[in-house]
Length: 251
Image 1 (cartoon, rainbow, N blue to C red):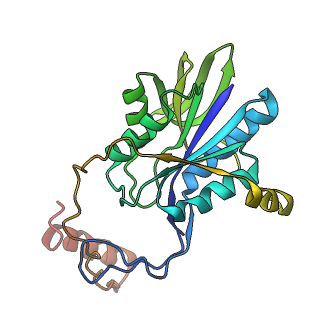
Image 2 (cartoon, rainbow, N blue to C red; image 1 turned 60 degrees about the horizontal axis):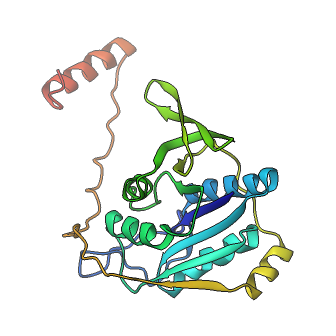
Image 3 (cartoon, rainbow, N blue to C red; image 1 turned 135 degrees about the vertical axis):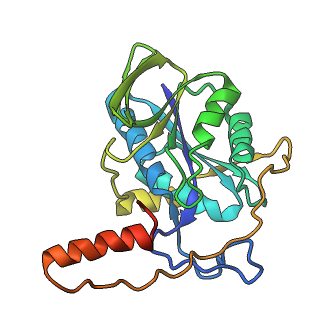
């Protein structure tokens, strides 16, 4: 079985966000870059399938040379191969990224393609499903439990009313959600070995103009200070009801 894990490099979730002076992008001059947390669940699931079913695992990332760091991390965790779709484009449009991924993997014979449910930051939750559509294969999204058996997948996915079980044939795209597993950390031996492994560069066969464009970024307005209601509990309840009716206009 051949498994692909698509990875996205994102700013550390603890990074203090700053907006670039031009107002249409973030200031990335002092940012620590990490693997998107949702992609870590995808990578861990691939590692578990490698251990239990003898699968081979390829990690793939789209971007400039900076994204090689997340590929090195995947190699340190046990991935067999690292694929770098090399481009200097920002690749903020999910359809552009999905097209580049689909073109890169179309003829590589992958049985299972794993994506994080969404990329931390953009939160489009679109690349995985788009790749499935572009390749014409089955998909299951927001998966919290995955079982493979004789060329088929059985996936439990989160929906508003609870859990939904989806069954389908491989090859397929699965997007992963928190709860699927607990991602591991690389050990020193894996980190040292990853430094010696080759990262395979995949040049773009075509360049696609993005359909999405960021017009302006701005922080939300500051919240108004809270107000404490005085009096007895009954008086406080009456004052709160009056404020909701007359000021907030909720009722």
